[in-house]
Length: 455
Image (cartoon, rainbow, N blue to C red; front, side, top):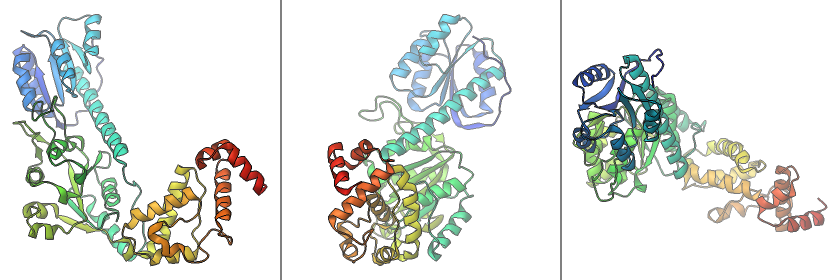
C-alpha cells in the first residue's frame, strides 16, 4: 500500500518524540538520521521486547513499527498498546503485505501504513499527517475540557476607566514576549479573561490555551494532571497519560489559583519553568516542552512566601511580569459598558429579549461594592434576562428597595409577571408552545393568562 509522494513541509517537529522499532539495522540507522534532524527525540529498538520497557519509561508521540519482528509481531503489540491506553500515533511498515494486511493494520489502530522500500518523502508525509492529527486531538481535548469545566468568557478586557486602560496597555506590551506572567486580583476580577487576551495577542495565538484550576485538582493527582504519568506509576495508573503541559505545547498554560499548589508540585513546576522540560510521574526520561505559563492568584503571594506556604524561588520565577486586575468597586464607571456587553452576548444565547438599564438602575449598581466583582455582575445580568427585569437578588436588597427600579411605572407582582411573560412570548415570535416551555408552565396556563390580558 504505497503512499503518494507530495511536497513535504520540513518545518521542525522539535516538540515531538519518536520510537522506531525495526529488526533491520540499516533501516534503523536511516530513519534515525532522517528523523533525528526534524524531531525532538528519536529512539530505536530492534524488537518488541526491547521497545516495551522504553515505552514504560517515557511517552512517545509516535511509533514507527515494523510488522515482521523477531519474537512478536508489530500488529500483536499494537493491539496491546491500544488496550493499555497508548494514545499516540503509529506508522506500520513492512516489506510483505497485501490489501488484507493493510486493513488489519489500520483496524488495529495504525495511523498510517507504508510498504518497504519507501522514500524519505513518503515517511515524512506520513509523519506530517500523524502530527497534524495529534495537534487536532490536543485542541479537541482542550475544548472538551473547557466545556466540561465551564470555560470563562473569551471576549476581550472590557472597560474604559483609567485603571483598565492601564491594564490593557500593560497587556499589549507584554503579550508578544514569552515571559512568564503573574496575574493578581480578587476572585471574579477577570484574570482568566486577561490571560486569554494575552494568548490571543501573542505569537502563540494559533496554539492551544489550556486553563487549569489548581484548587480544583486533588493534591495527590496534581502532578499527574500537569506532567502526565507512565503505566504503573501509582495505584490506578493502568495506562500512560499525557499531562496538561503536553497538551499546551506551542501555546499557553494558564495556572489559576497557583497558591493552592502543594509543595512537591511547586518544586517540580519551578524546575519545568527553568529547564523547559517535564518528567511524567514514574518516568526516567524528560520531555522538552515549548509552553508559555501564565499564573494567577487572588492571594498575596508575598505574604504566602513569608508564611512559608509558597516557595520563594517559585514566586520570583513566576513574577517576571506582574499585572494586577482592579476590583470592580475601584472602577464603577465601567459598569454601564460591562452591562451592555453582557446583555449583548447573553440575550441571544438565552433566547431572551434585551433589557435596558436606566440611569436610576446604573446609579444604584454603582453604589454597590461588588464582592464578587465582574463575575457577580455577569450573574446578575444573566438572572435579570431570564426573569425579564433587573433582579438584584437577596444580596442587593437595598438596591431593589429603591422606588422606580422596575421596567415600568406599575411594579406590582402581576404587572411584572405580565411584562415578563409577554417579553418571552415576543422573543419566541408568538410561538406559545415554545414560550410555555421556556417559562416552565403548561400551554393551557399560558393561554389562560394571555386571554386574561387580552394578548
